[in-house]
Image (cartoon, rainbow over all chains, first blue to last red; front, side, top):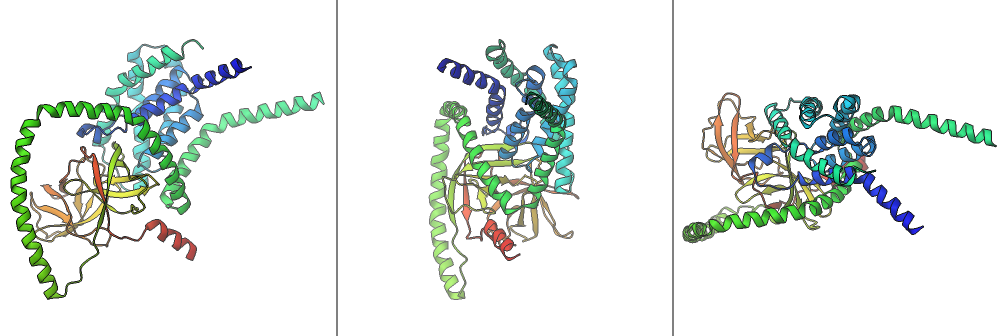
Amino acid sequence: MKENWQENALNHFYALMPLLFSVVLVALSYLPLKSSLANNARPDIGLMCVYFWLIYRPDLFNLCSVCFLGIFVDIVSSTPFGNYLFSMLVMCLLVTNLVKYLNGRIFVVLWVGIAVLMPICFFVQWLLLSVYYAEPLPVLPLIFSYLVSLAFYPIVGGINAVILNVFLQDD
Amino acid sequence: MVKRERENFLHFSQLRLTIKKFAPILAFVVAFVFMLLSKSENILIEKTSGVANEVVSSVVDVLVLPASTMLKGYNYLRSLQKIDLENQKLREENRRLLVANAKNRALEIENKMLSQLLNYAVPPEATFVTAKVVAEEGSAFAHSLIVYIAGNPNVRKGQVVLGQKGVVGRVEKVSHNYAKIFLVNDINSKIPVMVETTRVRGVLSGENDILPKMIFVSQDAIVNIGDNIVTSGIGGVFPSGIPVGTVTAVNKKNIVVKPWDNLSNLEYVQIIDYQLPDPTTELAEEENIL
């Protein structure tokens, strides 16, 4: 009975692992780095995690996980509440419809995939916030943020791939 | 009995399928409603987000701690290389400061005497709260800090935040142990400022760009590169005369101001308590009146 309970708890923990690690990675992206680059164009780790886990483990990282992560980022961030949730839902919608073209492909294809999908999410965010503030936000920092996020994808994807291979491959 | 159970099961399955089908749409609607609610600045939303902010900031603080300690250690080792040079610089600076201090003391006494002669009403003394930067956000959409205020009750929304040399932002949200600060280059930041020498007034406005801009400056006003910008104190939110930055570019469209402090390099900040009324209390009072 006790063993059964422990096994259940462990299974639940493994099922929550993608979300937990995404939360940790997102939290780490807010680390004060004392760098001009970090202060102006931090990579959007949340979007990258949503993209990665929805391709590899959509059974463990579902809509609820996307909503939880989105709300978490919205609380930490100082942007209007709901903005990051909205952009992550857009990413979720895009990935769930394109997963058959992305799953099982080599890394470069996934990189190209996020390079195509991320601007759509960024644009939606830009549009929402421009309407919210009633003035168009500058585009240049947005492009810069996009490029930095794209450059960081191999690192974030690599960390997530390690978690996937070490903890979540057998079940 | 079995038939009824089967019917219930079918109904339940259908309900689950319908929910699953409409869940993404519902999630989009919820996200949109959240944005609308955050625009409304309702007291209930403010308080709820304050509690959520407290919980999440604590989580971020704990998660960031090991990485931040490692980073500090790395920076310490790097600083050891420059310690001798820095020591010499500090000695020189100390000598200069001692002279300046003596001059300041003389000026202070003179100022007091002249104030007494003019019967000048002294503005309220500001008190400071020093807070440690726990997390920072810098992206195309926001520039902010989360600082640890250790449950200090004097920190309130709207208070001015200083770095080592001048204004870096203002307090936006306060929970029990943490406060969220909008930096001067965030789109939400609007600070009444003036040119120190010519007293030309304007508003320092963040645009989510690297540097903030001075707007609402009269067309015939002359502002030059290198002019110092200080707070004007208009609106009564910020005290006047606090250094903000220096003008780095002037063109037809913009006056670009570089803050005195490096916004990317803030470890501790000072939150000034200028005895402002608490906007949250005011909002609650207004709602009660209505």
